[in-house]
Image (cartoon, rainbow, N blue to C red; front, side, top):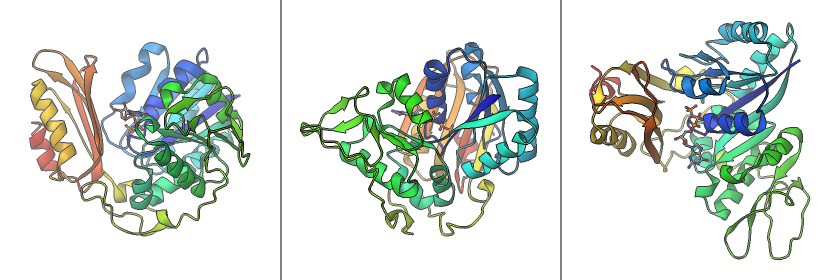
Length: 365
Ligand SMILES: Nc1nc2c(ncn2[C@@H]2O[C@H](COP(=O)(O)OP(=O)(O)OP(=O)(O)O)[C@@H](O)[C@H]2O)c(=O)[nH]1
């Protein structure tokens, strides 16, 4: 029997980062295959685990839950036959619907010895509220169908923000385990616990009167709806706070990022991702100066000249021969050392992208 874990999450939520953590800490020693699906036509993440001996199947240019569903079924079957893995980890594209991915896996299940173990949604805690408003059809589906919701970037949030986020997520999914512990403090035991238990909240991120964050990993794992009194610690896990979701169902245009439009007019509609989101991707041999690359990424982040950019990432060569990897989600950019690759690759995903302007910006005419 091969176990299958689906690690969903919106664009830039932290799926790949969380998968690395799982592979290093939780699934170490297992024979693993990762099926990675990028909405854009240029795969960027594929190389990251080759050294760790993980087999990687990349599927680009669409979603395995809709346009690539037939290909996905064949790919999963092939992986099972070729490698007989202990576990297959599926990373759907950020704009894939978790319910559709589950259905796609189940359709293979009829002929194969597999069992879905984890249905994970990684949620960027800082953006959950606005994304739920603006991209509700896709976002809500991932949250609602998850058995475990993992909140990323909680170390960048205040306790009150974390609590509000947990409450909001609980309003969308009454049953999932919700992990809100900052990932650098999240231990193997805690992750396993969340995966194994159906209805738990890992309230490791404790709000104290002193306002600092405490890691109570060993002794603060609570059953949902279990209200504990821990002296001066107040626990607002939000698990019993059955929010009516009214706030996240409102249709006000986005105020958080430049020109983010409301794409959730039809919560019950069935849009394919490519009806709402577009991607632009290029391979390039262009060698950038470090300053030029930083300027490009900054320009993408700070202006709306190139459309509404929800995610950009890439790996490119510098004039010096060094390679740099960049990541952008609204409000956050990162440029870091990268490993030399066969060519530079750039991928931008968003709405209303201005392709010609992007080509000019990246010098890839
Ligand atoms: N500070 C911080 N950064 C994070 C965290 N999670 C992810 N990131 C950063 O956010 C960016 C996106 O993370 P990924 O793991 O690539 O996200 P993803 O969901 O796989 O993104 P897609 O490529 O859209 O599928 C990277 O620059 C990460 O380093 C987190 O918990 N804290």
